[in-house]
Amino acid sequence: MRRPGFGTDGVRGVANSELSAELAVALGRAAARVLDARGFVVGRDTRESSTMLQAALSAGLASGGADVRDLGVLPTAGAAFLAARRCVPAAMVSASHNPYRDNGIKFFDAAGVKLAPGVEAQVAAALDLPPRAGRVGSLAPEPGALAEYRRHLLDSIEGRKLDGLHVVVDCANGAASAVAPDVLEDLGARVDALCAEPDGTNINDGCGSTQPERLAREVVARGADLGLALDGDADRLVAVDHTGAICDGDVLLAIFAVDLEARGELTGDAVVVTVMTNLGFRLAMARRGISVHETPVGDRQVLAALDESGLALGGEQSGHIVFRRRATTGDGVLTGILLADTVVRSGRPLADLSAGLVERVPQVLVNVAVREPGRLADADGVWKAVAEIEAELGESGRVLLRASGTEPLVRVMVEAPTPEAAQQAAGRLAEVVEGALRG
Image (cartoon, rainbow, N blue to C red; front, side):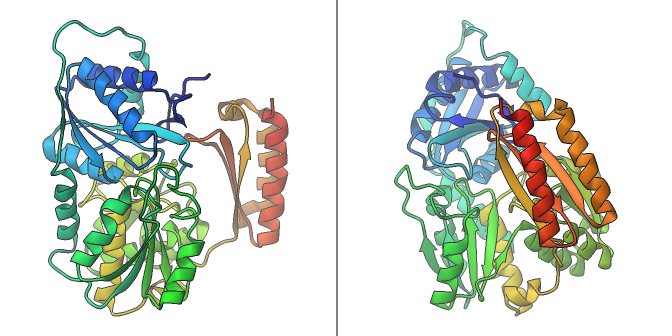
């Protein structure tokens, strides 16, 4: 069985096989050694394997000399927030939007920021080192952690309320179940909660930000003003307006950018996006005089670009949105609250705020299952095909291929003047990728 390495969002694999308890212990011990941490906070999502893996990870951290505080079930952004609040590193046991059989471990430094790739490489290199003689850390619960994170969320709209707003929130049977409905209600919204009864195996199952169709139907059926779909660890958000139309991260980011710019709070009149962001977003920002900075995929990359340029807002099409003045990572619950606040402040429904804002260029994304995605970089035949299609599209389209950092997939993305052209080009490339990397 292969040992999963660090990808774009920590270590991820099939729980109890690829990501075993033994590997979790080793990761904990290595992280404590590399980060030289005397304290650590650790949270988890609702997968049936998360309790086991959190216990193993915590044992490894204690073996490395760290005093570990168990945060329980809470969103990934909650663990990052508490790391920064307590000035200690954090870890989160979650595979985000993946099915329940998968799990993952991601680390944050004492500023609540995901570890840089170089630091992750040091942790990976220390996995097989034996325990050092000396101090053994303690293990203890942190019963007030969720309440502290909730207060942070409640403070995010600076005393304003969401009175009169009817919201349906899809918690993906994940970590958001413990916080999102209650916080929205505390802010004055009328809340209907969906998929907020986790049983260990139903996380992301037909629900959440990657499958918001049920939420869209429920918003219309219940006559609600707004729908919010989170994923398993609540670090991303997709929204639904009162007509049932789905607003992805590109649309939400555009709404926030325009709102912040109008209020003089969009530092540098610029926003950070990733290579996956639709060309239509870039054109929409250009029409409003807002600059766009582009990074590789991952909210860690977005955060680094925000900090490098001193900017306030960035995000991904998937719904990871970073409000740098309020968070150190993507926070779907925070994003949902701020979106609801934007709707209430404007006095306009989400459908009006999004209408005509991003004129999306037809985009097709195909996930090609392969055994070793890392071989993509050396697949000359694939890149020859990419060059041919790019030449055909010219300036009217765009092609992007990348190996997934979290799953055994190569992601093929094509933008073209028509949906048919995009679908045809993506299909051609997918066939080439499959043929080149099948073995």
